[in-house]
Structures are given as C-alpha cells and as structure tokens.
Amino acid sequence: MTTAAWQLEQTAIGVGDEIANSLAARILQVQAALGGAADGGHIPLFTGAIYYVNAAAADDTEDGLSPATAKKTIGAAITAASAGDAITIKQGTYTETGLDVNKTGLELWFELGAILDPASGDCLTVSGSYCRVTCPGGALRVNNDAGANSGIVVTGNFVYLNEIRVSCGSTGALGFDIQGDGCDLRRCRCAAPLTAAFKVSGDKNKLEECCTGGEIADTSIGFWLTGSCDKARLRWCSSQGHSTAGYQFDAGCTNIVAFQCESGGGDGHFVDNATLTFLDILDKDSREQHEHSYPTPDGEGTAGDPVTVQSQINDETGANNTANYYGDVAVVVPPATITTDWFYRGMNIYATTTADDQRFFSYRVEYDISAARNGGNAWDAGATVLTFDDASDFATGDLIWISTPGYKPNGEIVEVTDVTGAVVTIARQTEASGRTGLHWNHTTNDGGNEVAYLCWRAEGEYHSSDFNYSSASAREFRASRWQQPRRMHANDGVIVRMINGTDNNNSQADVAIIWSD
Image (tube, rainbow, N blue to C red):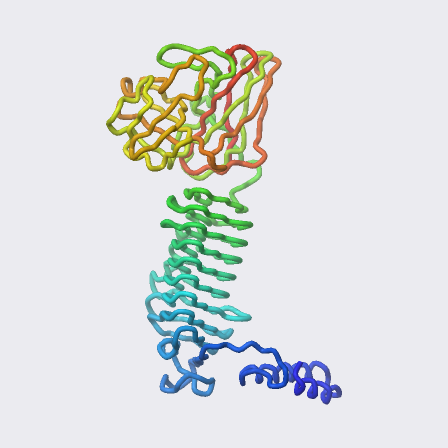
C-alpha cells in the first residue's frame, strides 16, 4: 500500500474499515491511471499508447488518448492506433460493421457491459498477429444475429481471445472462426449458431474452458476441427444441443487432443475422422446398458451367428498345418458396416474345440487409409509387387489387409517392405512352408475389386488387440473386455486371426465383438 493510502486508512478508522478500504483502493486506481505511484508503488506500465472509446461520445474528432477525449467508434480508434497500442472500450452498444483488428500486437480491452451488435457482416475480425481481445473481470457480448455471418473471425497468428460470449440467435453461421495458427481462446462461449460454435482450421490452437449451447432443431456442431488442422488442444470444454455433433474432427486433421471435455444432451455423437487423436470426452451417448454384439440377430430372419476363426493357414497351393504360425483371417465387422464413430469394447468367444489353448489377434481395418489396385502386376498368388491408384498413405513396416469381396472377402494380411510412388512391395509374414508373396489369385478371380486397407502400424492408434482363451470343452463361453474401449472411426471394420500352439494348428472358435455407439 502507498503512503497516501495508508494515511487515509488510519484517519478513517472511525468511519469503518469497509469505507476506508474502498477509498484506499480507489486511490490506487487513480494512481494507476496517472502512471503509477511516485512513492514506491509497484504498478506495471503499458508501454504502448492507450486509446479510449466511449459510445456516448459526440463523434470521433477527439484524439482518443484520454477518457475525456474518447473516440465514439472502435473503428476510429483502430485507425488512430499503431502496432503495440491498446484500446479500452467503455460500456455501451457498438453497431459498427467491418471491424478489423489489423495491426500487430494491438489489444482491445472491453469494459463489462460492452456489446458488439453490427447490423450486418462479421462482428469482429482479427487479421493482425499477436493481438488480444479481452474483457477483464467480465465478458464481452457479441450479437451475431444479423445474417449467416461469424461472431469472431481470426486470420492472424498468435491471437488471444478471453471472456467473449457470442450469441448467434440461430441465424449467425459461426460463433468463432479460427483460421490463424497458435491462437489461444479462454473462457469463450457461443449460443445457438446455425453451423458451428467453434470452427478451427488453423494449426497449434488451444481452447480452454470454452463452452457452447446449440438449438437442437438446427444441424449445428459444437467444436468443429476441419481442413488440415494440426495439433489442436481442447481442455475443459463443453457442448450441448448441437444435433450434428458436439465434437467433429474431420479427415485431414492430425494430432488432436481433447482433455476432460464434455458432450451433453441434444448433442449428436462425436465424429472423429482425424488421425493421431487422444479424446477424453465424457459423451452423453456413452450410456449404461447400451452395448451390442456383432454379428447381431434382428429377429426378422437374421440369425447373427458368431464368426468362425481357425488357425490353419490356406492359399492357392493348399493348407499349411505347421503349429505356431498365423492362421487365416476372419472378418468380424466388414468395412462400412458401422457408419458412425463407435467403441470397440471387447470380444465374445465361443469354444468349438476341447482342451484347447488359443491366442487371438484383433485388428482395426482403417477405412480411411486404403487404396485400390490400378494396373501393374496382377494381385495373384506369389506376387510381391503391387501397383495402387494411390499408395501415399502406406509406409514401410505397415500391415495391410487385402481382400476381394467377390472371391476372398476374408482376405489376407501382408507386410509392406517398400513404398515407391504408387508401387508397394510386400512380403508374406514368416511361414514355416517358405511360401512367399500373396496367398490368393485376387485379380484372376475378382479383377477390378482388389482393395487394401491399413490394419497395423507402429503407432498406438493402429496397434492390434491380442488376447488369450483356454477351453476345457466345446461350447464354453467367455467375454473378453478391453481395459479401455477402443475408439473406432466411422466405417472401420474388425478382422481377427489366431495362433494355436497345442495341436498342430487344428484349433477353432467362434467370435463376435462387443461394441457401443
């Protein structure tokens, strides 16, 4: 406390501590406005010029450098300011159109009670980099209800937005449209957008404690990551009432983390088509007693029998019964069967052989990482060089699943040893017989329908799920549940194969998966 404030507090003891403290605090505020205390107070100084805006001012003819000479409009203050300056905006309603914070390092400080309410267009654009828009101790209100516009558009980089509430009234398309990189949004809110509350297409952006509520009648999205958005971070964010999705991460987005986020009533199920994501989203669709098995009976002629998995390996030259090698692939969930994002929770296993020890390997069929044959060598037994229409999504060391729906729908798994342009060199995984290349004559028997999908890669998202089962008698049953449900993208499938080390690869079991949406 400064000397003047201490003296005032001592002389005001008889008046009451509450009044004294209030007066002392006011002295500090005045000293701050005048440039700081002269007798040892430690008040940091803003090094740029500070401009003042007051909606009650007569016009913009004053210099704006003090509250008494404030500008009437924010746009006039932006024009007058230089890079690194700040503008403080008094309580009031501002109806200006085309506002653009277009100077590097410019800061806008809104007082509590300030409202942006333009008659048309985007409410506020920030095209400058290293800018800040904030309302210390309160929240700036932005009315984006004059057409299919955006509340806040950011095209600059490293922009900081704090305590901003955008109301779209079901007519404003977007609450926040973040196109720049490295931006930071904290405690921002959006209500009733027509398209999305938070749309993020730039890289390395962070949203913390942001929330949104939609109108269920509108097909809107809460948090929408799109384009080539990379390294976005969402922390403690919440969504409710967005019927398309509370959270939607599009294909092309990468390295997304959503930590302790929530999706509430009225939200559509989250959509995660991005790659390398970590999603910690408490989703209202993660409901109790909401699990399914697949294949599933429908009570209308479909039995939903489990799928048979056996450990013998076959190819065009015959069967191989040597123990301890991978058996044939069995498709449990074909690609494009479950068309929304879903959770793979475990496996139901029905024994069909007695006194048997079995080890299973379950793989995700990555629907969005796939390619079809295009010219080049035939994809027939023994082939080690395959030509694709586009092999750019494959890499050395990948396991890919190759199938032809009209000939070998269960397909086969092979390893990628080289990718050069559209040409992929593959190898059969080690086999006691010494056979090499593809197992089956895919092109000869179903030419034009050959397709390969990624099913394993040395990254956590693309690993297999391995598990063991032991049966004393036929028809024993076990539900094997993963410790953490595996998040699956829309249209992803599941394939399974097994190894049996006890009876020369004559092992067999029936399986079905446990899943929820």
